[in-house]
Amino acid sequence: MYRFLLSRRWAIIFVIALLLIPTMIRLGFWQLHRHEARVARNELIATNLKDAPVAFESISTAPGFNVPTGETWRAVTASGRYDAEHEFVIRNRLEPGGTSVGFFVITPLELADGKGEVLVNRGWVDSPGDATSYPAVPKPPSGEITVTGRLRADETTASSGIKDRGGLPPRQFKLINSTQQAKDNGTTVLGGYLELVSTAPAATGDTPELLPEPEHSDIGPHMAYAIQWWLFTTLVPVGVVVLARREAKERAAEAARPAPSEAPAPVTA
Image 1 (tube, helix red, strand yellow):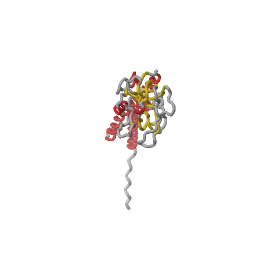
Image 2 (cartoon, helix red, strand yellow):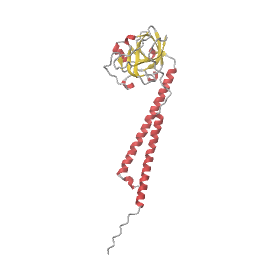
Image 3 (spheres, helix red, strand yellow):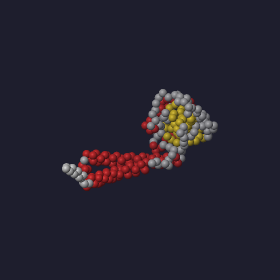
Image 4 (cartoon, helix red, strand yellow):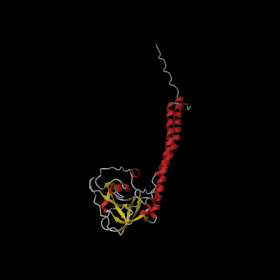
């Protein structure tokens, strides 16, 4: 009754099913790992944001320092004077909570202890409306200040997915990268950068729009996707069985159908 399963067509169906099952299992685990990474990231952000601020230079101690993953988003402070001469902007960045494309304003802070400079992301400003003009940027506070912010690792193409390229207008870049700025300006810049939260004394007048605290409560849909892939895996053998039984039933019905009778010979006079 099921000898048709030995046919070439059914051999192809079995091969496809055997390929689909491990593929869907792997896709499910891929989504599970993404879920676990998202949960770990949320926990890291929540923990580091609650910790008491520490001095930036107590973590980043030298140029080219690679900020450890466990230290990212940690509250840090730095004291010194803004180096407005070497201020620059980062192109093609979205407005916080919006859809407008503009610039991040990055101003180096000369540390009071003379250890070097710290890149400070002072926030977002709108685009001037064309691709080459420098945006209108509020001046940084003058004099001795203390800034508090969130510690971030240098951006790279590998970590951000943003392709760095030359030929940009003066003082415009694609990535926030301390090594790139140290090379470009000939200054000593400690690795990593600071995402500004507050300034003491408080800044007056117009300021760039501060970046909000990162989202760390949404775990995303990855666990649901993982479960879906594993459910699809179980449906593959079920689908094969259903197809096989349907074809067997159709073949049995065809075999039970009576053969058409021969037409009677014509009667001659």
